[in-house]
Length: 357
Image 1 (cartoon, helix red, strand yellow):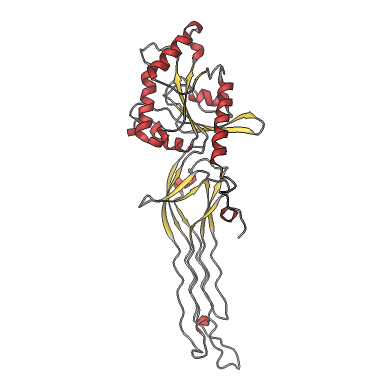
Image 2 (cartoon, rainbow, N blue to C red; image 1 turned 120 degrees about the vertical axis):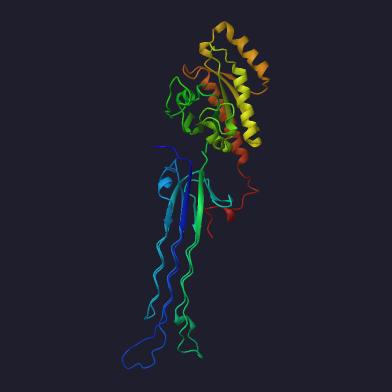
């Protein structure tokens, strides 16, 4: 399925039905009195986070979503039926914002989370509502209220614990395929990854994390060059970034240090918060570097790159060094997850999503 991470839709809740102004007409009852019922409520528009969806492709072409109108009231004390609600199923991680103002209205971050996007209009009152001791034959009735209408921008941000950074052909797709269940396209030419790929890495029983392979970045990506700039925002929710560098010998004089610096600059230009996320350096394709040259080459790279963080030497293709890396990643992610959970003192069940009213 084609990956679509943006879509624009119009939603309209159902209008309320009109109230009725009728009078009872029965044999031998000359003054039957008012019997006009209320109109029915218009249908609501809901959104639910569905873990089985990973793209917004369904909303790229179906842009208008409208709930059913409430039925009008009628005589004989008959109230109109409420309009049917509709539910839009969206991937977990979808952000819904107002298309005109850009204001973020909703975020679907929890599987199964359900929210009301637009409320249906209330039904109008029939003349039965206006009956009183001094007004025994009211002819008043009210129309149904209009349902809410919104024009929304849907934006999907991939929910992953770990994001991969790197130039095209740095070996990101090979890495994610070797450590997870993801099977991205792999070839010996740039830009084989055209959209984010998610993979679940199993460290042990009941120990796993989610990793995202983002299209490769090039210099000028923050200004729109290349493909990776379209997906940089997907890294904003990750807990850790892996900067993968191709250490294979280059015949065309390309310097991996300069490439790595370019990636860091693009990251900083795009978003300071993203730039300040924990980032580990992963030197890939070390199996292509002669054994006797590896230590010197790594030392020279780290020195010139002025890197002071964690450094891992791996070969994704040969799966060398990947076991230690994924175990360390899991430890880091687990610690961050524990820190993000509220303490017992901060937890109040009244505000929990499944707390009874």
